[in-house]
Image (cartoon, rainbow, N blue to C red; front, side, top):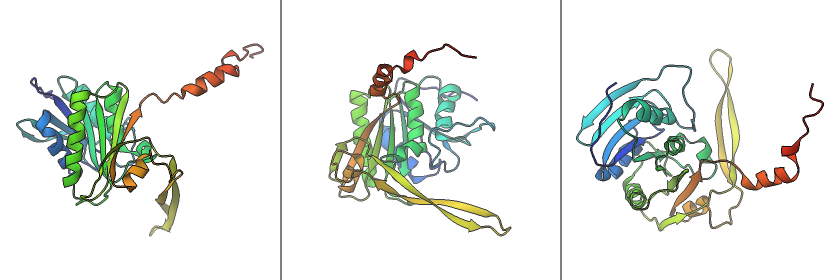
Length: 268
């Protein structure tokens, strides 16, 4: 595979989890094109819910789809994280200056970010030391209107270009539907969970199978500093998400109760 070369302009890597043909990724290309050379590496089909999964049991393929000045588009049979890995290690001639993922069709707020392939793509960028942003629109329809989302995504990206992102952090951005957005809120992730249900059915051969359904349950609906509150009240939410999952207070507590001084005597 011939590596994509770049000039002095910023190099922006774009991926998503809805597939290379999704309307959201086309909108995101429109967002970032004014700021640099764009290389798209995205899944060849929907990879929603893949989180940070990587492919290890089957070969990965990378297919060139489109080329024009300042824009190259590739598709892969891998996950969003795979796509970023392939771009960095096998396609590009240097590290991207930015990784942007999305615009996802549907929310990735609160705990949904842990399941999200969109956030997984941005997280892979951060693991490689690249400033990264995940964008999502609260509209699951294939023909969702991204016109308002494009404006806010571009404003946020422009700010990041000017001021940067902290090392080890990616920004998880969620955007409400419609044109009456009130502004942007920098938030924390709301505490909540998906209350999951499985619709049990029987296939024509008599085998039982299940479809995952359910709904999100916000455990702190009165809190006004969360992403869920911002979205419900018409604001774009930005949550800075860390890669280091260490809970530092527990480190101190475990040391205080002596777990790092467990006896090694009498080991058989």
